[in-house]
Length: 120
Length: 108
Image (cartoon, rainbow over all chains, first blue to last red; front, side):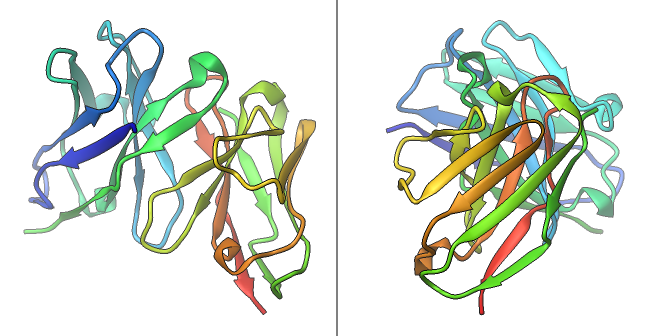
């Protein structure tokens, strides 16, 4: 049973940097998948933030590219998101996701999500 | 960037009725990379359909997907109480991967 669990602070100050980690269980971080982050502002739709491969290769959404970085730790079965210069518009539920597009399958496993609020 | 437009925004139906949800892409896309997700209140999205028409593991067969080019459809043949939720389409064939704005299926 594949499970993903986000961890990190639920409150970030304006202009601060968000750091989230996703821990994977029931699967390895292997060449079979990419690993993505998706966010959802309260009451709104889904936005893809970016993805990382086991090798450390990344793809980011151009709308966030200047503020995003991702990293992976295969041995710990974790991948991480950093989002800088946070504003109220970045308040959202952040999900980590297994991205199985290599097999043309889509985003097949999602974490439960963590609500991040940007406020002083 | 592929823009996905879903319609209608809200669908009001009764249990047992048929639901038809639409997703239109801003340009021709490969159906191999078109997915549908269900999101119940307070829950993470769940993959229902991938490759436009293939059911994901655990997806009941009352859910079916179809379409090609720019027009895609998710059909729920007979609504069960647990099907009242928000549904999103997604294109994952090229970065950035985009989602439609969602269709809410509510109880009439």
